[in-house]
Image 1 (cartoon, rainbow over the protein chains, first blue to last red):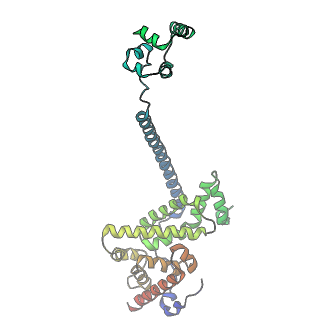
Image 2: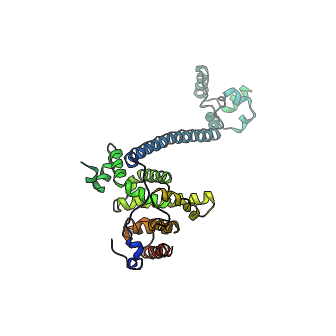
Image 3: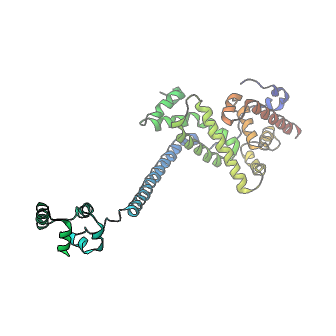
Length: 137
Length: 183
């Protein structure tokens, strides 16, 4: 140690033998490393348990958030039954729709072989839509 | 190979390997436990308190070792944790009892008697004088007087400048010399 100037100013203090007066229980330093190892292992176990709990809680929260987002953003038409040709014809909106819009509305509906045959017949014979609507009414 | 033959660098290298990390850490504890214990014991005085603080110090060291920067010395790093833990303990104890720590430490005078020190004896007066120092100054005094650490290392440990530490140590020495001379 580099000597301090102050040592000359405190001859009594620096004339004493430097020793710590505190006694340590017998064998303390033999057992301390093992006690610390145990404490470290316990800490690790606790950390692991906390981590698993955190993962579980985080996953649950994330799942709840995703479910909520999907629930509130689901398409409004999801639960609607497919619209049928008859329903369109029976409704008042039929007069506001042109052929293409009509086709779009009905394209996802299940079509029977009978319906397909009628459609083919109308196309092949070039029947005007006015006639068709009048006939259906 | 005896643990005394492992350098800090070798122990830190062994610590990085998962299969040897526990053994390496045990060696680190064995290597530094006595110095760390006495440093803490001089600050908190009671053995049971010192034992708690020593364990907390090494548990924090275990957690912090993976991020330990090897350009620092392992010993000063452990000392830094130990000093912070001991000073935090003293602060908590002070607020818990809401009385000056000097009064708490005064209670340990009988304990010093049990350690073989006789009232009025110069060793006893020295310990009483040290106890009257504020906790941080006591840490500075102990590190320089008992552990004979360099001011540069003490600066790393405490985060204070070497100049501030020298001034603090000189004040402490003067107070202690006056105390032990005047009784």
